[in-house]
Amino acid sequence: MCVAGATGRMGSTLIREAVARGFRIVGAVAAKEDPNINRTLREAGICDLDVRIVDPLRIPEAVKDADVYVSFTTPEAEAANLPVVADLGKKIVMGTTGFTDEQMRKIKDAVSSRVPAVFSPNYAIGVNILFRLLRMMKVFPAGYDFSIVEIHHSGKRDAPSGTAKKIGEIISEVRGYTSISYGREGLNARKPGELEILAVRAGGVPGVHEIIIAGPYEMIRIEHTAFSRSVFAQGALYAVEWVYKQERPGIYSMDDVLGGL
Ligand SMILES: NC(=O)c1ccc[n+]([C@@H]2O[C@H](COP(=O)([O-])OP(=O)(O)OC[C@H]3O[C@@H](n4cnc5c(N)ncnc54)[C@H](OP(=O)(O)O)[C@@H]3O)[C@@H](O)[C@H]2O)c1
Image (tube, rainbow, N blue to C red):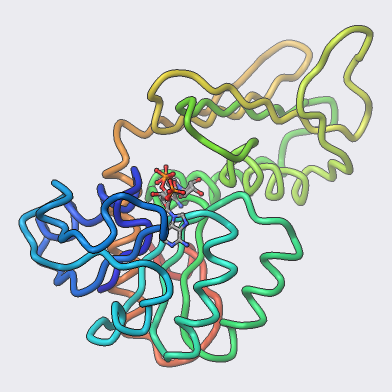
């Protein structure tokens, strides 16, 4: 596989997990300003491989021997790189979050008819099972409020997290919420039809998502905590194995990867 964002928090974790699990890394891509460009993964201190880290202009060379391109970068980088990768006919696993609707529409247009690709805002198996569980929340009677709180490390660029947005989409679909409040200040009571999504940025937290469901006399709190980035890497590697076997072009989700699990 070829890994983009190879020197980043997720990319470097993914490379280490992939090597430990016997996947073959044949290409590595980083931002063109990255000080590790033209160094090997070994020289960059990521793993014991002499694969050279190249800038995005050299993607054709980096993916030449790869079956799958795995990417954890930035929305701007994905918008520039994924159409190139799809044109080269390489299968894709992408985990970046924080896209505008317009960016995501263009990427889907460029990829969906060319190659099989898995896009997921969260590759943790537990989070994807949680997405399924949330659909059961339909059964709560009216009068129960839903709120989402997410906590991430202070280096995270986008807020709320892609996962919190996805949880919000599912809850809005099953509970009929029509608007979202991203925080409160002053005289600002909760309005009917309003879902709450709150983002906290602190320290080195890899990711916590909590769903609070409160009625007049009781409250349920469902929380997922990622202990380390390895959980996202593990899920992304399941997606790599799955997408490798797909022949039909299209954008798939982790739900497709997990199938009947
Ligand atoms: N789906 C999931 O399970 C999951 C889990 C965790 C994180 N994420 C998402 O994954 C993304 C990356 O997260 P992170 O914590 O790893 O961030 P990060 O440490 O900032 O890593 C992103 C890396 O991509 C690099 N990059 C920028 N432009 C590039 C380009 N054109 N080509 C190749 N690489 C480029 C960045 O370089 P510079 O620093 O020089 O810009 C940086 O090294 C974020 O959107 C995050 O929300 C998803």
